[in-house]
Length: 212
Ligand SMILES: Cc1cc2nc3c(=O)[nH]c(=O)nc-3n(C[C@H](O)[C@H](O)[C@H](O)COP(=O)(O)O)c2cc1C
Image (cartoon, rainbow, N blue to C red; front, side, top):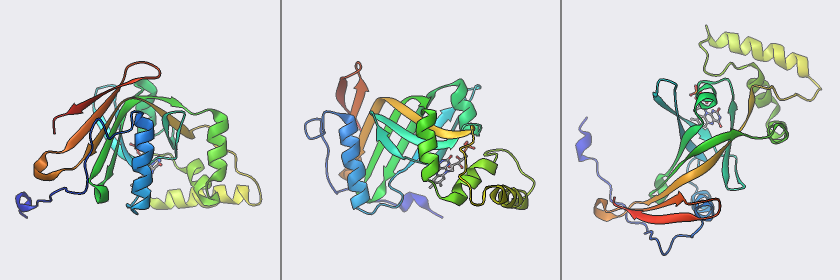
């Protein structure tokens, strides 16, 4: 396979310090809306990276479930590999790639858990079977077989027939409080547009253009 011949020119649109919304959260919401309108596949999927105690980075995709009070929210198992890493080091990056729009957004910041009320409320909104799955899956742990999980699912489901399912303590929301957000728009000849927001203080952001 010769991958060196694969080439694509990015020509759709452009981005500048002037055209960008001066509030990066508003700019993000605009691009997310455009990704939804463009029927991008999994427009809310973001690759989050965390760092272990030994400084080894690791990445995986999660789904954005909201942008609330200027924070990016997703839900996961707090005892998972990412959950354990975030417990020791609250630094995180989140990357969106919307290929249909030739766009990337790179977010860096620190995390906090959502309130138990907020986690409860989102947990309640999930399909019944997904709630059972969240209870029984020891996310990121080695398991002997798929059957083990299937059996645990059936046993747990039997306990809750006709009842509301309480959210397990090990599952809930994580909010990313951003301190750096970069918007990337593909341009011809690899001269892409990159606009970077860095947080200056609680309410203001510095804006700069980065070389492609
Ligand atoms: C499209 C997609 C969406 C996903 N959404 C989530 C999610 O919202 N929360 C989650 O915990 N895992 C989600 N996953 C699974 C994660 O990528 C990952 O496998 C899991 O969270 C365990 O990661 P960890 O072992 O690094 O903690 C998703 C995977 C894909 C491919």
